Image (cartoon, rainbow, N blue to C red; front, side, top):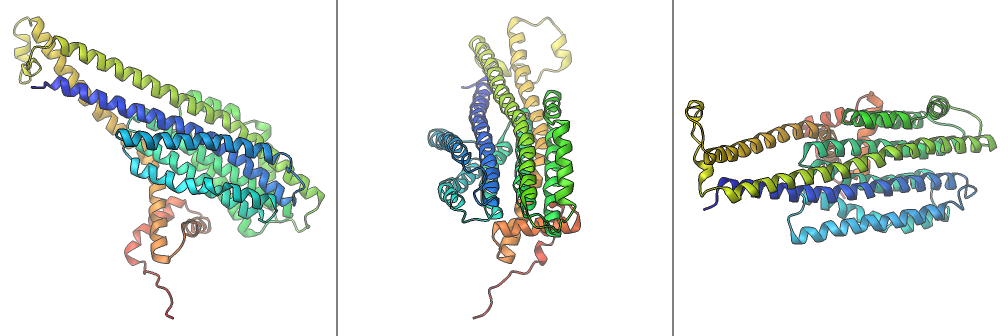
Length: 426
């Protein structure tokens, strides 16, 4: 008959399997981060290329596309590895959601060549190219989100939450770069455009605030060092020019130069962010490796104790009270029995503490889930696409000067009162 220690060993083995799976998923998150950065850069170049009617970045696009293609192959290989492993062993705890996100994003990767051809042929407006790239990047970030939401170790989960929010904030910075190029190239901005610009700025700040909340001192120091005072000052100056004023002059050479200056300034800032993102990925790999080594060391200790344990000995002291334990000097066997119970209790307390901390960490991910549920509700009741539902939530948030999650919560609170939109009678 198996002893309690046998099952404690089995629990440790399960934990090691989970950590191994989490390490592989974390490696994939790092590769996704590099692909997202490359796509963000391609999006920025494409916007300048389209806004200038092919006059700028014509030569730089091809090398950037080649870099994206190489990273895309790495990401696809990572997806394939996850799927193959899931066929032979238990996949991640949130495997259904994670694989669903991957299934959604792959058609976007498949559609990239056609998008690039249309950009090269100047068949798209800058806003259309921005939206297309943003949709693909959002899909890739949703894979990172599911990786963070499925993490079972609180320390790794904290780092994944920090990384997801940093990547999301960096994506809003990339969207602002592309958006600013379009606005500054046309020489004027409407009230709607200015509100959208301000919304992109606020969205970045919220994401970076969550990142700082979940980062250690070393990461925060690197984040501060990466933000050049001169670059930030130039960024704010140009933001005021584009987002808080409405020039009446038509676009000219000065405006074209202004959009190039804006692009260069934003690129310096985003490239500097990449150093923080790389550090997050490296810390994540190191933490996973440390956790796995620690768990394997504990497993070896349990196995050594099991080899010296008499049959059913680990239950002999289960009902001992403090007085009985202190009544007489314990023999070696009783020390061994007590050590087994101590290990079981320590494991139980550790798992409970991990569970409590994990709930605290995951609370930060609930905002995204609330927004997703609100979008789903609007899609069902108003017959909207996902993009239209998100735009409605975002526009309401901007108009009411509220957070997106607050608007989403209001929509969910009114779920029972939303009428189903029915198609018109024929």
